[in-house]
Image (cartoon, rainbow, N blue to C red; front, top):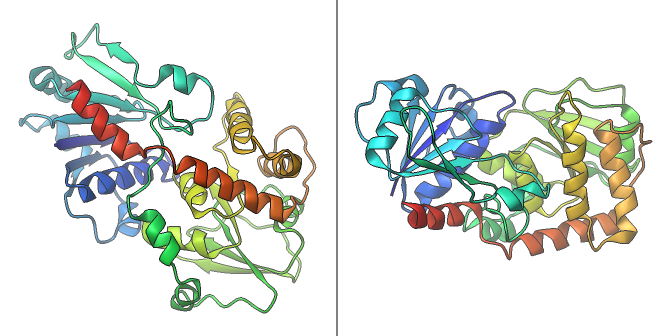
Length: 342
């Protein structure tokens, strides 16, 4: 099928990161994809070689295109399509899907695959469908390329670290740091377990507080998506942010802490608690420490930083990954749904 994926870049690379991974995943499965984006600059480092089957196009050009839309139109994160595109949707009647943000909240299962009749505008009479990624079989699943776990299993950690000129001292753990901000040295050290650490910081580094000599910091450049995945595989602990890197940390199966995008109305606190409830279900012994560390890292409720017990943390991450691997991935579900709704 021909897919048109529309993406507006808000900030922090999350929108384009998710859309690029989806476009590349679909193309690798034999689909043809046009990715319409209003700011493609991040792709220079996310995907410097592009991907066969993915045609990146400038968003404003979509209004001037006179050809038919694809068999499937993905409106990523409610980005509001240009009026001329809506006209062509009415003419071509594609599968029109609003791909929503990832959340563990209960409304996701209720809203997934809901039909939204269009009552006004150029696409009046058409139907748009809500499609929600998620963490249960009643949602759209998570982005996961078919070969990802085989690549993870075959990963040569020592060789990759040599290629990146990363050399840990004896007894040091490796931790990646990809976050909006560091809340405090206390929160960082508690998560690290107060053990010697080589902290690997890709991209633009956040302002770091004064750290003890036991924590060394090594800056890395922005990493292309496959290399970012390998960074997470190589580390003993990963700090991630937003949606894209959260999913990649889950597949890495290592202990991780997610910094959720902060919202002025504190809605992010409910989203984080909903995520932790699902993640920690079945792990009562490890739950309290992990929950406290995550809440402290996100500045929620004045929680004091604590050091989670590492063995229980590892077990919880590995168990959740194995559970999520039993669900169909996002691209598989989107392809199936597009065929059903065309």
